[in-house]
Length: 88
Image (cartoon, rainbow, N blue to C red):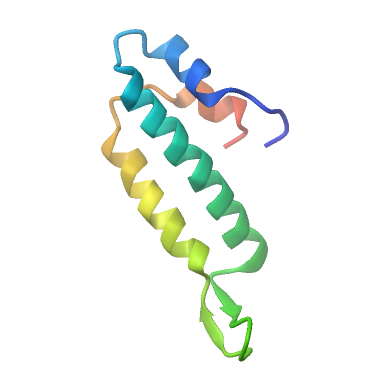
Protein backbone atom coordinates (compact mmCIF):
# COMPACT_ATOMS: atom_id res chain seq x y z
CA UNK A 1 0.00 0.00 0.00
CA UNK A 2 1.91 3.03 -1.25
CA UNK A 3 -0.31 5.74 0.18
CA UNK A 4 -2.43 5.95 3.28
CA UNK A 5 -6.11 6.46 2.54
CA UNK A 6 -9.23 6.46 4.67
CA UNK A 7 -10.87 3.35 3.25
CA UNK A 8 -14.27 4.13 4.78
CA UNK A 9 -14.35 7.67 3.32
CA UNK A 10 -13.28 6.41 -0.10
CA UNK A 11 -15.91 3.65 -0.04
CA UNK A 12 -18.57 6.19 0.96
CA UNK A 13 -17.86 8.20 -2.24
CA UNK A 14 -18.89 5.19 -4.35
CA UNK A 15 -21.65 3.88 -2.07
CA UNK A 16 -23.84 6.84 -1.16
CA UNK A 17 -26.88 4.73 -0.30
CA UNK A 18 -25.11 2.06 1.77
CA UNK A 19 -25.43 2.00 5.53
CA UNK A 20 -22.41 3.32 7.40
CA UNK A 21 -22.09 0.10 9.40
CA UNK A 22 -21.84 -1.95 6.19
CA UNK A 23 -19.07 0.28 4.86
CA UNK A 24 -17.25 0.22 8.20
CA UNK A 25 -17.39 -3.59 8.35
CA UNK A 26 -16.12 -3.76 4.77
CA UNK A 27 -13.34 -1.24 5.45
CA UNK A 28 -12.24 -3.04 8.62
CA UNK A 29 -12.30 -6.44 6.90
CA UNK A 30 -10.32 -5.05 3.98
CA UNK A 31 -7.66 -3.56 6.28
CA UNK A 32 -7.18 -6.88 8.08
CA UNK A 33 -7.27 -8.80 4.79
CA UNK A 34 -4.50 -6.60 3.38
CA UNK A 35 -2.33 -7.10 6.46
CA UNK A 36 -2.85 -10.87 6.46
CA UNK A 37 -2.27 -11.17 2.71
CA UNK A 38 0.99 -9.22 3.03
CA UNK A 39 2.18 -11.59 5.79
CA UNK A 40 1.32 -14.68 3.75
CA UNK A 41 2.99 -13.21 0.67
CA UNK A 42 6.17 -12.37 2.62
CA UNK A 43 6.38 -15.51 4.77
CA UNK A 44 4.51 -18.16 2.79
CA UNK A 45 1.61 -20.42 3.65
CA UNK A 46 3.83 -22.68 5.75
CA UNK A 47 6.03 -21.16 8.46
CA UNK A 48 8.20 -22.42 11.32
CA UNK A 49 6.56 -22.76 14.73
CA UNK A 50 8.10 -20.06 16.94
CA UNK A 51 9.04 -22.47 19.77
CA UNK A 52 9.67 -25.79 18.07
CA UNK A 53 10.64 -24.79 14.56
CA UNK A 54 8.27 -27.43 13.16
CA UNK A 55 6.44 -26.44 9.98
CA UNK A 56 2.91 -25.13 10.57
CA UNK A 57 0.28 -23.33 8.54
CA UNK A 58 0.81 -19.58 8.68
CA UNK A 59 -1.83 -18.29 11.15
CA UNK A 60 -2.38 -15.28 8.89
CA UNK A 61 -3.63 -17.61 6.15
CA UNK A 62 -6.78 -18.34 8.19
CA UNK A 63 -7.26 -14.64 8.86
CA UNK A 64 -6.86 -13.85 5.16
CA UNK A 65 -9.38 -16.52 4.21
CA UNK A 66 -11.90 -15.43 6.84
CA UNK A 67 -11.77 -11.77 5.86
CA UNK A 68 -11.86 -12.71 2.18
CA UNK A 69 -15.14 -14.52 2.81
CA UNK A 70 -16.56 -11.44 4.57
CA UNK A 71 -15.53 -9.23 1.65
CA UNK A 72 -16.95 -11.64 -0.93
CA UNK A 73 -20.29 -11.78 0.88
CA UNK A 74 -20.45 -7.98 0.73
CA UNK A 75 -20.26 -7.96 -3.05
CA UNK A 76 -22.83 -5.15 -3.36
CA UNK A 77 -20.30 -2.70 -1.91
CA UNK A 78 -18.65 -0.94 -4.82
CA UNK A 79 -14.93 -1.20 -4.17
CA UNK A 80 -13.12 -1.29 -7.53
CA UNK A 81 -11.86 2.31 -7.27
CA UNK A 82 -10.70 1.80 -3.68
CA UNK A 83 -8.90 -1.40 -4.65
CA UNK A 84 -7.06 0.55 -7.36
CA UNK A 85 -6.13 3.25 -4.84
CA UNK A 86 -4.69 0.51 -2.63
CA UNK A 87 -2.84 -1.05 -5.58
CA UNK A 88 -4.69 -4.36 -5.13
